[in-house]
Length: 292
Image 1: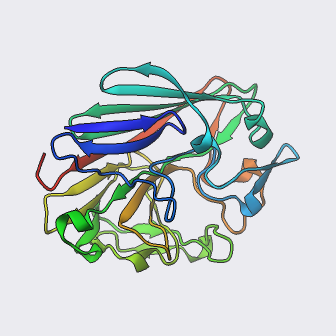
Image 2 (image 1 turned 120 degrees about the horizontal axis):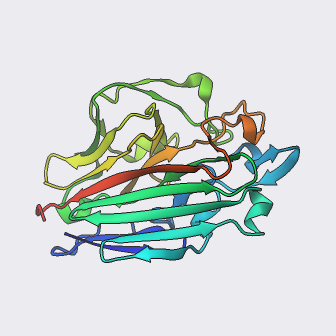
C-alpha cells in the first residue's frame, strides 16, 4: 500500500511512500540538482525554437514545458483514493497562449498503482492546439540497497526496437534528421553518462508501452505504462547528477530544429475543435525492496 501526497501547485505529485516501509519513491526536488518532483507539462512539451511561436500572425513567448507546472489548480473532486485538479485559462495565460481551456488532472490510487489522467477541454471559439505530458522523477534507491547506479537498468515492453530522436546541443531542439533505430529490445544500463546528450526520446507510435526501472539485486522496480502516448522521454540532470530518473510519457514534443515557428505547423501537437475533449494518461506501479 502507498501513501501519496499531491500539491495543488501544478497538480504535482510530491511524494509516494510505502505505507509500511516508509520508502520514498519520488525524487525530493533538491534545488541544487532539479527542483521538481513530477511536473505536468502543458500547453507544450519541451522547448520552442527561441522560446516563442506565432499564431494568427501574432508572436507569443512560452517557457520550456509551458506554464501549468507553475499555476495553482483548484481541487474539483476528492476522495480517499482519488483527486481531480482543475486549471482554467486566465487573462495572464492568454498573453502566452491565446486559447480558452479547461485542464483536469486526475489521480487514482489502487494498492500499488497510481494513475495520472489528463482531460483537456477546448472552450475557444475555434480550434485549440496543444501538447501535454507527464514528467515524474523517481528515486533510484542506490544507498538504501547498498548498490551503485550501474546496478539498475531499463527494460521496455513490447520488446522491440524504437526510433530515437536526438536533441541538438546547440539549441535544445529535436535533431530530426539524425533520428535512428535504437536497440530498446534489450536492457538499457543506467549511468550518469547516459544523459550527456540530454534526454533519450523514443517514438512509441501511440501503442501501449511499459518502461521499467529494475535491478537484479532487489525486488524493487517501478513500471510506467504510457497508454497510447506517441513519445516517451527518459532523463536525468547532466552534468549535475543525483540518484533519480524521470520516465516521461508525452502527447507533444519539442520543436524540430527546422521549425518555422508557426503553432499551426508544430510537430507532434494535438488539435481540438470547439467543445471537444482530449483524454490521455499513464499509470505507475511501485514495488519495494520488501515486496510491500
